[in-house]
Structure formats: structure tokens, C-alpha cells
Image (cartoon, rainbow, N blue to C red; front, side, top):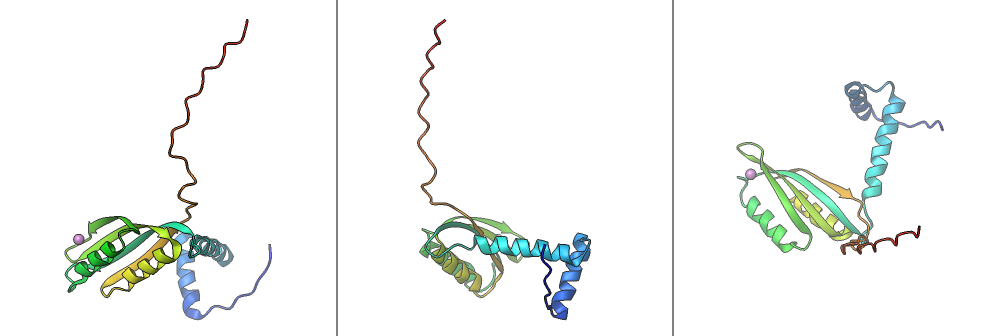
Length: 154
Ligand code: NI
């Protein structure tokens, strides 16, 4: 263990104390360790630009916002190579939530996700990167049937 001293502003400390209270942490150090770990995990999941990745793009929008559903549809058609599938949930009378699975080179996935999140009227935009190794590292061909073992001579 190492002891470090950090300086936090009052607002951040108040937010932190709320989380400590809500999650029932024993002390601040424990909470900060956990939050640092999840931050590191998130950073590790942000892939290098040329690397292949899979990501879930989550966002909420008002389906009555002028032209927004049309703009989103156009965005997704223009990036049909990245956008694999989208789950649509009608949250309430006005709001829709969508979860889109994106797959492609890190830089392209990130640029497209940022573009969708930045669309006017899109709220709570968030991307979760899933570490994906090379898309062909797994084998689609079924394993060869095993030859029956020769019976041991008795
Ligand atoms: Ni809807």
C-alpha cells in the first residue's frame, strides 16, 4: 500500500461523500480505491484508434423534437457498416431510449458515437467499450470429428 495525498474541491468531496453514504463504504479510502479501479477499467476499455472494437451506445431523446428522429435515422443509415443493431424503448409519452451496438475501428466508432451524442435533443449519451480482440481470432468452422480411438489390445 502507498499513501498519497490528493486535493479535491468541495463539490467533488460532497458528491463523493454522498456515494460513500449511499453505497455504505466504511471510509473514504475504500470508496476512492473502488472509483479509481472503475475509472481505470473504463480507460483501459477505450481502444486505440485503429483497433477493432465493439461498443454499446446508449442515449435518450425526445421523439417529438423537430427532425431529430429523421436525423438519427439518416446518421445510422450513413454508418450502416458500424451500426449493427438498435434496441428502441418508448420510455414515456415523449422520451425514447436507444441502445445501439457499434462495431468497427475504434476511431470510427468513437467519432460516430460522439456525433450521435452531440445531436441536439439527444440526452444522457454514453458509450461503453467492450474489449474485443481481432474479429477473426475465433474459429467459426466446427471442430473436426474425432477419430474413434483404437481399442487397446487386450
Ligand atoms: Ni419511442
